[in-house]
Image 1: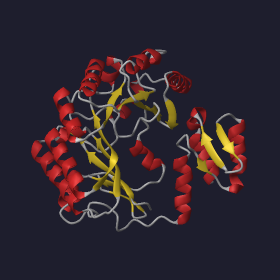
Image 2: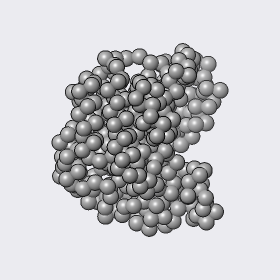
Image 3: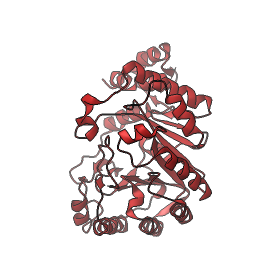
Image 4: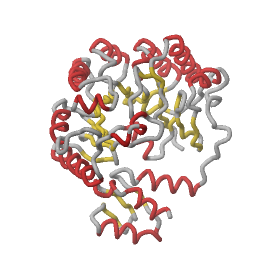
Length: 369
């Protein structure tokens, strides 16, 4: 392990839960519970002992601004007091365009937040409505304008592919609309129908693209973003030069991170562990120790073999790739011959391209099998 650490804060509160969302989040909660959760996060931060330099801080959700802007600022102030932050520390907060205005964004920027991740998802209002989103594309346009005026120079946009009710062949026009906002980074995901979500329950009535249409959307996405100067540096991420998400890169490079909050995951002190996705349980156990809300004690330390396999599995999610075993070099040669990536037989480093990312799970299974 290194002497560098990243921090993740899960803020599981939403105005309303999106119809496709399977992440742990709670809609329309009262301020008393939210404040109790904030106090619990502060207790956990105050009790964690580390000499590591903090490289990145990420506030995800849910919808983090629902913690309330003054609390977010107070929490970041506490983080600065408790830990040593790197001079160029990347501090990201996820936002829904409908939940912040210029004044809120200005306050966040002045407090030290320096990167935004904006959940746009689509530029088509009818599609957004079908997903249960609370914002319109006009809200996203206003949000980006406010963010730039507030001084944010690093703003990411989320896009979802394979959405229901998206008219055939209209992804290009949606991408052009989103790119007109001049995002520095784009995260793009294919819709997953997760069991237990409202979208899954009404799956039989959805008008979804078939496999060929989804593949075409992915091709259009990659080609359009490449032509506009975005590098496909990770399976679901595209960035202009110098705007890659440093926090997410920590995950793919097997770096250490500590997750605060209900449902948050960590990789710290050689273990992968997580907190129970239960706000009340987290609040109660936060009085005991930073590890009390998690399964740290029962989680095993990763073996050398497990770490090596994780380095391959996670590394192949990125354009940097990973070094594969000598006895698997034939797979690297085959991947290269099929046009799925580059393989250097001298270093045994395999790096997938956009086509290869699409079949990365199968490639990784072959290498680790």
